[in-house]
Image 1 (cartoon, chains in turn cyan, red):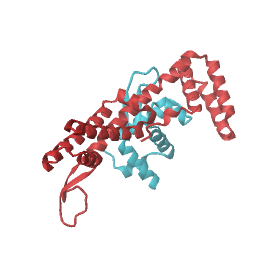
Image 2: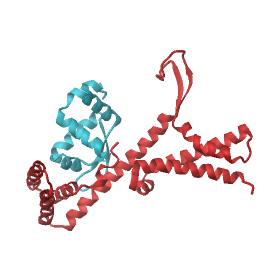
Image 3: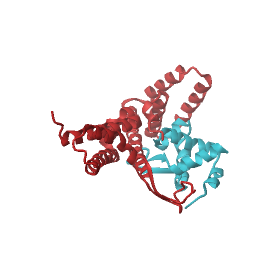
Length: 88
Length: 206
């Protein structure tokens, strides 16, 4: 589903963008790594990552881990939206 | 001593190899050898550079009929990167901006090359992230929960910023409440790695 970048920039909270920023800084990360980095719980971060993925802001690569099963990374679209968010 | 064509092709190949390895080294740093072993995109980048350099040299030799002139080999080796990293505009309406829409026809070699580089970085970044999950798993398997907690407490205590210490102590209490023992130990191990400043974690942030 296509979303206008400007619309997307207004759809998430500041805390949500922090998740995307940290993911961008890390390059690629599992939900647990990201949650720990943000001092949050995986159960909160993972659904948000899925939501970002649905909107094309992150990409996921599945793998066979014991507790994490996907590695997420920010997409080009995600970086563009972050730039828009920072510009506002 | 006569310089053979093979030696000159070898020179062009060697210089182009140095060039592309320099690019990859700048991207992956100490993980370069690991990247070469795990990403076929990095090999594609190498082959593309070597192939372009040698093909360019071959065309220049044929077109200019320069024979075994070392200077030509050096010039081609130094200039071939421009071919891979440039946009060649072959048609543009007079006065039009370079917007690549209807007014401009171009061969976006730079876009193609950048796309391959990005594929390479993404592949290696994901592989590194997957590999990173092994470290806390091994740590959790090798230590008891008490040992992990103690190590975390020592790392927290070593932090000079009171606000950070308070935040980390609160987070440790939250992690300690995770019901599943295996999951709790795993997250404690990830937290310990984060506190000890896992340098690999911040790589490939692009």
